[in-house]
Amino acid sequence: MTHNHIRPWRNIERRKSRQIMVGNVPVGGDAPIAVQTMTNTLTTDAKATIEQVLRCAEAGADIVRVSVPDEASSKALKEIVRESPVPIIADIHFHYKRGIEAAEAGAACLRINPGNIGKESRVREVIKAARDNNCSMRIGVNAGSLEKHLLDKYAEPCPDAMVESGLDHIKILQDNDFHNFKISLKASDVFMTAAAYHSLSELTDAPIHLGVTEAGGLISGTVKSAIGMGNLLWAGIGDTIRVSLSAPPEEEVKMGFEILKSLGLRHRGVNIISCPSCARQGFDVIKTVEALETRLAHIHTPMSLSIIGCVVNGPGEALMTDVGFTGGGAGSGMVYLAGKVSHKLSNDQMIDHIVEQVEDHAAKVEAANAADAAE
Image 1 (cartoon, one colour):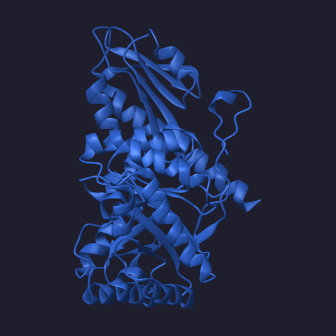
Image 2 (cartoon, rainbow, N blue to C red; image 1 turned 30 degrees about the vertical axis):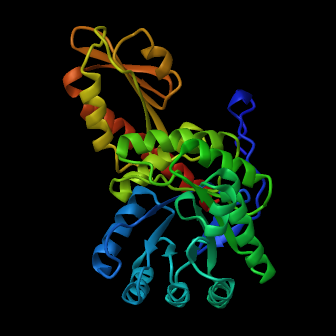
């Protein structure tokens, strides 16, 4: 739950779910909502896959999923797991033996699709491998690959068919006394996705992984994901998320954090509040923000920065941010620190100076956190 006694309209009551472990990452319960992505390299190219995993981890990924389509990928997975700083989920489709091999290779979680993993006896073998290797599982229902009997029953992919698929597979796991699982119901249609998740959330206490599958490119896919997952997260539904984009996986991680940050559910790095700019601007807001986003990408400490082009809203926004700059006139503006007016600054020094102020504030916050931890 996010609690804000001063501004109760910001509160989000998270759905109560049981907690599982994906490697060393707690999922569900009162754990932070985890951000996940998936590699797009050939898994058999362990070096390239590891390099991509490392970039995703640096961007903030809590968990990374890796496709395991063949036996050679299973063999490479062992090295990838060993070198990864975050838990690795093995993505399993069509051949249940890949799931067994992935569990034995050290995967922290197995993602299986009820629509293509095969008959129940094969699922039981995967369950045994997961249990024997302390591996969790994700039931990954996808509207594009529902079981034939459900498509016959409902005539087309729909929320009810997705929920039924998920519940059927939950029953298989629970009948085999396996409870270390989470579940997802994904569709490329935002309405179908949201409806399915809302229904599911009332029928199980399993942790829920959110995603709008095959959402599209960086801009269109992020918008669809923000609308679909945003309304679910706002309703308290969701324990892990993935923004599925036709873009580098690091971008999925960044967009995932932006969605969570907008709802106050996770905080990482600098939250830049900036105006769209207009004829009143005292400096080039758009180019300044572009430069600051690049220059401040290395800051992981949660903090806020306001960059406003003029004095209409600038002072008010700066009062609520850690560092602020408001455009004025005659080639200079005003710097705010901790919500208070600090000093004037010429526009030509602005970017370097703001970076210094942000880095200084981050260092102070980290030092204070370290001192608190030491106590």
